[in-house]
Image (tube, one colour):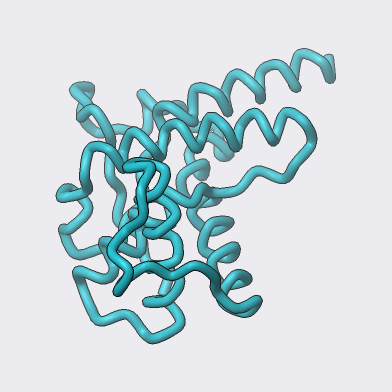
Length: 160
């Protein structure tokens, strides 16, 4: 019985990495997210899912944090620490996408321990928000108002 539950959870997590919504800051900017970032979110979710199968605690991804902070930065000026975190995570994601360095004037190579804790808090929160329907037993199909779904659902939530 426990093995069946573990298999069911693994399947749910795998499907969730493909179908869970992308969480963005409220304000309408989430729909303007670049397609490459949406793809990167799915890929990184699948990697995180594989890490969780090996015993690591599941969390949100760098790409999800980048998308959230991108949409927040378009809604209001980010405080200094969050701006540094955003530029740090954007630098990492740009390198993954382009395999080259972002412009030197915006690239951030490292952040403080405090900022890293804040980033990890954001990623944990993003994971909890996107998996909330599944954790409460609501299937993806039942949680949507319309049977016709967009390719990627974007959900607006406030972290700040």
